[in-house]
Amino acid sequence: MTIEKYGAIDIGSNAVRLLISSIHEESGKTTRFKKTSLVRVPIRLGADVFKSKRVSDENIVRMLDAMQAYQLLMKTHKVVRYKACATSAMREAENGEEIVTLIKEQTGIQIDIIDGKNEAAIIAMTDLHELVNTDATYLYVDVGGGSTECTLYDNGKTITSKSFKLGTVRLLNDLVTDTMWQDMEYWIKDSTKDYSRISLIGSGGNINNIFKNSGKTVGKPLSFLYLSSYYKLLNTLTYEERIWELNLNHDRADVIIPAARIYLSAMKWCGAKDIYVPKIGLSDGIIKSLYNEKLNNV
Image (cartoon, rainbow, N blue to C red):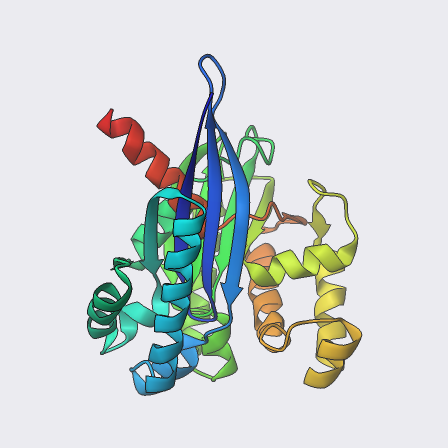
């Protein structure tokens, strides 16, 4: 058996995450991916960029600190491969490339700013057959702070995918137009019209949190009715009450409402009655892409 550790850094619009996974390989057996460590720092880049088109000086310093910490963590974990990907906020920041250069110079970490199509493709690399019934049809919806990536799967194959500038931080700052909602509605309805029964797969920190609070067994879906009632509950509570009564982190207590709205809208538009929450996302896709690169180079 061989065991190697890979690292994935996901620089989103609401937070910056480091996932370290152990890759277990043994002759004649399916490779196993085991999450070893997950660190999340709530740096809300989208709050800067979606309003001013730039990452603030304060958040640049925080990003440098986070990357320095992640570099040391990967070193102590003996990570042999890593990839750092920045998404919606960094790709729209006028000083994005400048920050990438600064971080490379000061921490040695190379950051790739990826577009929405690439983001959706990396997420699609995640092995869904271990998590859901691949004979069925699913709409995978990954909700972030700056964008939402949608991918349609049928019988285990990717049919189509698209990224939309519709994210929780944008919604909080009233930066989403009716046209943006309509574009996503039209795409989902058009892409799923030929399929009779569709379930949603939801990924992102907010739906993970909602699932955890539901008390549901891992692998069991949340119903549209449950998510709808939870969304109504969130709206009846103040920001402080959501932190205190629902035990939410302060940087989760505001974005969770627009996130629930996006998932509910997607379910309504494709006619899904259930949403599965397998706790996968961009960082898992990055780990898988690193492994695929290794296999291709053998």
